[in-house]
Amino acid sequence: MRSLSENDLVCQLHVSLHKEFDDEEFLTAELRGVVQGLVNSLGWLALMTSERSDWEPVLSLYTDDHFSNEIMSRREIVGRIENTSGLSYEMSNYALGVIEKSVDNETEVENSSAVEIEHIGVIKANEWPRYVIHLSDELKVSPPRTDNTLDMPTIPSFER
Image (cartoon, rainbow, N blue to C red; front, side, top):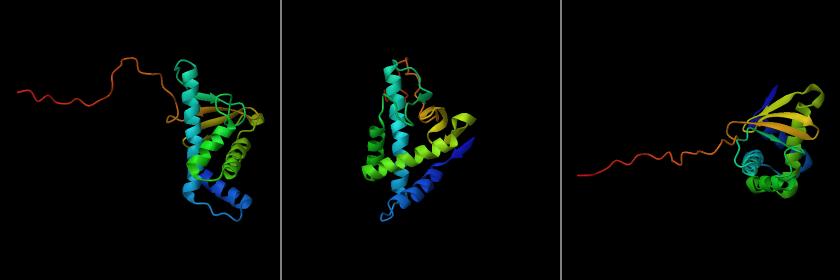
């Protein structure tokens, strides 16, 4: 299984966006914003999935079209990428397509291969263009606490 780091994606985005929008310059922070926008979208998707199932834990996501499904549309994901990266909607849409193509190339259904992406998790092709995303620990939604306590530090008593 191949692993893609955030830096790998940023490099791919830089090359692809520069070819498509050759009169533009792209900052590394903008390209990292693209990746962060996708990570944020998948985090929200995990939370919304958990909420719809009475807060059951969410360890994996099942999509209908690349990273989107009936809960979160591609348009929402592109909008979040646009807001996080500062790129235009058109550039954000293109950037998401670059990441999708990269994942598609790594997860051919015939080989049942997978790709691990830093901050996202392990992605397998389900039936093109559907993905099964086994979420990284940072995106997993755990069951809610039932003990109604907060992990707050104890304040010492100053009784005399």
